Image (cartoon, rainbow, N blue to C red; front, side, top):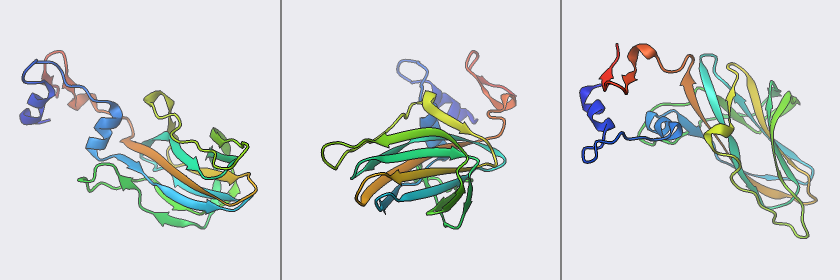
Length: 196
């Protein structure tokens, strides 16, 4: 960390430490990604998105933001799945000034051979009329998943309703190098010095 960067850690008026969340910092670092999906799913149909985590990074996965125009829509995150087919797509970096790309491999419209272990579920319930809606989900740091490296995951969306519905889902994640922050090159908050 350069001296110019270190001096910005404190507010020049109050001399207070500046603090931002881990997620906010990862956006600044260019390692926070998202892939928004809009798709129509037929009655009793499914749509599956594959996520293959890299071998040398830890992927911190956030519960999906999603909404549906219909009812009885179930969305799940499954670990250790087996897939085939699909289209490889590029994730969107939340830092639009960064040239970093996601190491996680994302494939849309995959065929699910085996589902693996379900580790997260969300649901848009039925009602007296169609148009049930759920948006958001758990998004705080305490409710993310640190995914296994080099593992196939899927987000599976199932339409249990009686009509085609439009689903919007936005999986989000950030990627950290295996082992995390090196203590040999960290900022010492007690002394205000860069440790080496």
